[in-house]
Image 1 (cartoon, rainbow, N blue to C red):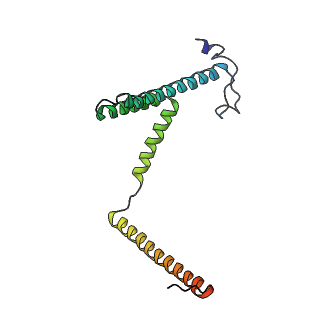
Image 2 (cartoon, rainbow, N blue to C red):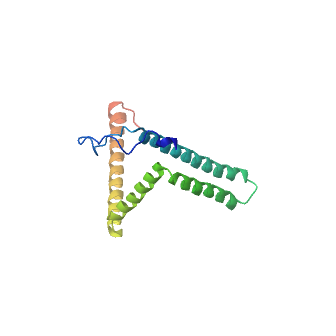
Image 3 (cartoon, rainbow, N blue to C red):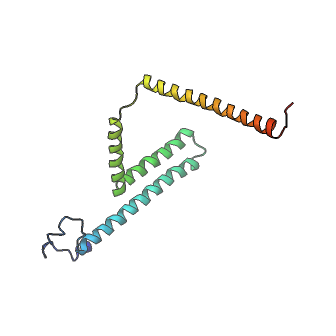
Length: 155
């Protein structure tokens, strides 16, 4: 109730230069509602973390029980924590982002098996050629340094 205090639907009309341009309202109710929503989201997120911690704690508290029950305790804590986090503004934005990422991933043209095998073969061939080059370079430098420059012949 007190959050609506000072908020009126009547008053001066917005200046045409600032209407819809991202300027914050000067009405006090808008900032109070934002503060209340942010605080509620923080509480929900903290609750989600507590639920997750409870699920992990259940894993250790049920040490005498079967492993399946211990794992189910963790999974139940995780599921409940995700459900609680989903109700926050950040959770909603994350899930929108995740859905958009899935849509974008579906747009990707994945290589065929043949293309994948050809690319993998080219990478392996390059690795073999590079290994051979580095081996020959190492042995050449070893021969120059130890045999020619220093005169330490290996026996």
